[in-house]
Length: 164
Image (cartoon, rainbow, N blue to C red; front, side, top):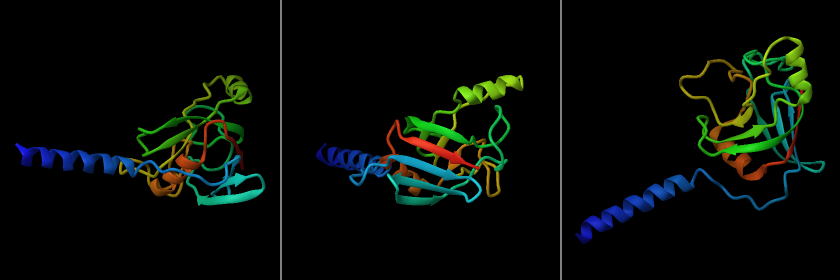
């Protein structure tokens, strides 16, 4: 019985250790803003005017232009904030962007279309996802390793500016 308990204990410790590696802690300067330049495929985590981290990003499968409605394959442009977290994302980890805002809803309504939603910064591509440089349905993607850092560093309420 004691051998069974020892094996069980090792299995539990191994499982907890494997889960723990997904979540990092961050004790550095606060990320006060996230800035994205779509044309450059760059995301910057900022503390005031100082760049804390820079990442190469992948975008919606139609990488140019502002998102106008659900299903257009574009990543939105404008001023938003981080409004939620998903530790169980299909894309490893993800943090939500407050799209659509009032302007986005009005633009979509004028086109007679729903604005869509569920725009996130998330981890990397899965085997079932589109191929090519820009592949998401409108989200911003980084590698899973990078997403661990971003998830730890960027808090809910952080401003995010997405530029063309």
